[in-house]
Image 1 (cartoon, one colour):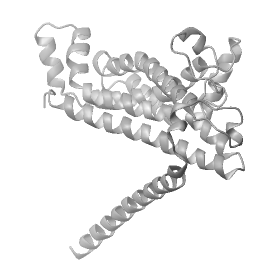
Image 2 (cartoon, helix red, strand yellow; image 1 turned 45 degrees about the horizontal axis):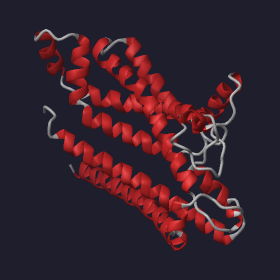
Image 3 (cartoon, one colour; image 1 turned 180 degrees about the vertical axis):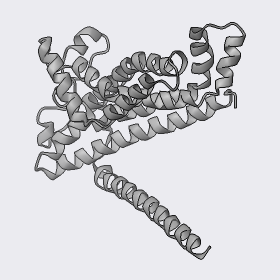
Length: 289
């Protein structure tokens, strides 16, 4: 009994220590960004595009990167939803739950989740070269969609697996087809988790730099929503690359703007995470438990 108590206390202490260590790292990162970025954050940074010599310390802002990042992550998330939701529904409604094919698919998606984002960028770049495309917003959307697709599928898959099998059987017993069951029962029941998975993938996409460094390019122009086709085929700025370029400049003023840009990106991701939690909590009220 004494030995079991000692083991219990040791592992409890290790878990508390690990939690405190992770929270401390997060706190240090946030404090560094806030302390170094807040003095350089101003209205011009979020309302203006870069003026001539912005990256050498002159005036302007990063409106082009903010809008470009939202377009990029929004387009990639929309593209990923078109493929991930049908795959997740197929694995849980149409395919046999304990089949080798389903296990193989889940294993493959787990492996793809661990592939570095730079590999997806290189793969997207090779696709662009094959079709003769230049670096553009469309290329970045495809690369980010490939990056977030496996994690979105696995997140939706895990959420849908939590739907009670009795609900599916009750739906079949009432005469519903598999498609009706998938869309009106399973997807409805798992909707809070699906939305959370989508918003988390959106946050992952908006903060990635490696996948877009080859595919999206960079420009000081703000993407024009009135001409979507032309905008998709032109280079676009993103916040991660704007931070990277500013940090590469050996001018303290520009490096301070990089931390301010990181602060803006952090706030965007924080807002997305809070929205995910609020939406999930609101929609959970209508879920059958």
